[in-house]
Length: 273
Image (tube, rainbow, N blue to C red; front, side, top):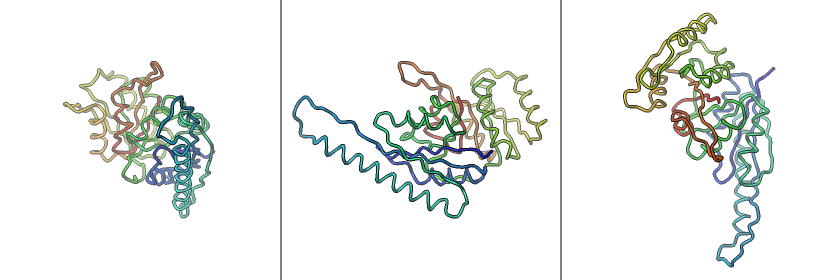
């Protein structure tokens, strides 16, 4: 059974970049996966103003909906160009959604696929949070400014937690195709169970992987920055990490590593909650 990757593409108020399309198509190609690109036509609800105003609300609504439509057309055209020579099967899922419920619709669609692919940036952070904590599926983040290379070496941010274990399980599709795994732990950020960590490394080795044991200290850096630096220095192609957060008054209170990775991923990152 082929993996089913989901690519949610925003059309309003900001359109997704062509870079995330290129990264998603290449990721699907590497893993012999089908890709489903969801492109919404955003509808703006009517606003009944109790007092006269200089703002022509109906004109603004029309402009916003046309922007969403035109953005969707541009994204579809780029998808056609991106897949023309790859052989990747891409299905376009077009749908209508009313603001402010577009991200929730994306989350519902993602539940029907193996993972979602999103750009790591402040502009897409709300979408990433909604998918990570609402879809029940892992999230693969790509840097906003570059098309990444083949995934062969995988770094695992390991603290022994249940979320880290779930992320590792969700990354199986990529780990099975890799040749090397790095287990990265920060020793001065929180207490790490050494026996548990050694057991993980032993298990990966018995599965046939070349495993590198990487214990580091943050030394004043944020945990996310230290982990990414260690992975990049060792030429990792994908970082696997647990996404921590919980809902409070309908707002996500994020762990520091998760918060930073959602906006500032410097290499491809798989997050799972």
